[in-house]
Length: 302
Ligand code: PAF
Image 1: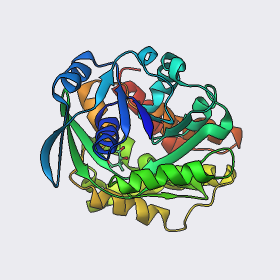
Image 2: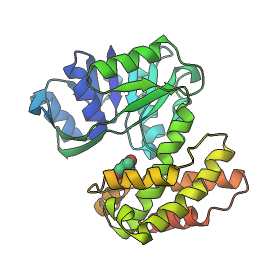
Image 3: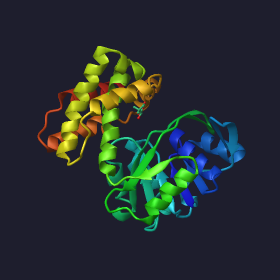
Image 4: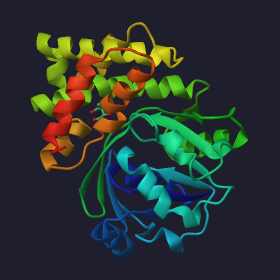
């Protein structure tokens, strides 16, 4: 399969490198010149349970040099989807399937501004990866990935993508409820990301302390009401599920905490900010999420 990975940070490099190693024709696209140059010169250095190795893979900062692939995999930060896809227009023709495995709400809708709705595939992944430096990625944790067409029914091409990922060592299933799956992941991020970023604690602190559990419960309950008003089916034990994720990823600094620490823009507008905007459409009050969003905006220098 010909695959272009748009946004080759930690997760994009992990997916791109793993798929290239499995024999797919992969091009990594990223704006970080040193990262791209290092990969071009010495391959992508991937460290996982099998040890460290260099994987030869094409990389470029110029999407204009990439011919339309079978699959474009979008891994830019969710706040950058529009800008990245605008730059990647030359490789997006109407045959290209575009898959988002990004955090947050609204990515599939953004992608539909660039390719026909029938080409949009969305999903959730539980893999963890860290970029350790230019051209160097660490695979921190494995887990299942679920994908599905966002606007139309699934088809053989989605099965083929899931099959290719699974065969490469990235176990993936096709979901017939991908919108519910995306909301479930957003609820995990609602409960964990802003609280850990603001309190400057690792995920495990939310599971270990009464204060942490209270904040998770308050933020997630509000957001569940929004998800249900949007027509989604959300499991009844969702708060326990979020606490469980916080416990299992206990020593992780959440992506939002990493962003705040590094002075980078966070994904708050796609998580808590999106919950607040969608709540307004349904006349729902979400004071906890509004406050979390405002505090993160302040922390990142709104
Ligand atoms: O954004 C993150 O950090 C992750 O999605 C999660 C699951 C909260 C674990 O840190």
